[in-house]
Image 1 (cartoon, rainbow, N blue to C red):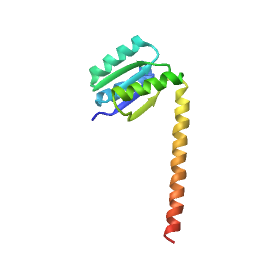
Image 2 (spheres, rainbow, N blue to C red; image 1 turned 60 degrees about the vertical axis):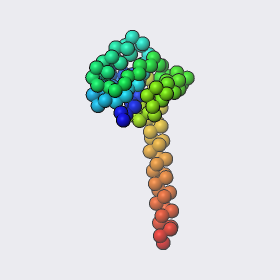
Image 3 (cartoon, rainbow, N blue to C red; image 1 turned 60 degrees about the horizontal axis):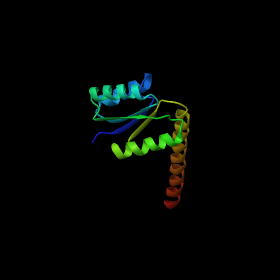
Length: 122
C-alpha cells in the first residue's frame, strides 16, 4: 500500500521538489497551498510522475480551521497520514516545536523506563 504524504507549500520551490520525489516513489499525495490554479498544475504533474493519487487542497496553513478541515478530508479520501511535511508558512515553526516536544517526551519516557528496569533487576 502506498504511503499517504501531505506536503504544505507544494506548488513551488522546495515543496514542489519534495512532492515530485514522493510522486516518483508512488505515494498518495495530498498537496496544500493557497492558490487553487497552481495546486491543479502541481497535482497533474505528480500524477504524471507516478503518484498513485493526488489530492490538491487549497488551504492557508496559518488558519487552524482550514488545516483541520484539510486533515479530515485527506484521511477520508486517502487514508491515514503517514508523513506530513510542512514547507509553508509559520506552521513550520509549530511543527519543529511539536517534533522537539515529541522527542523530549520520548527521551523522558526512555529515562523513566530505564530507571524502572534498573530498580526491577536490583
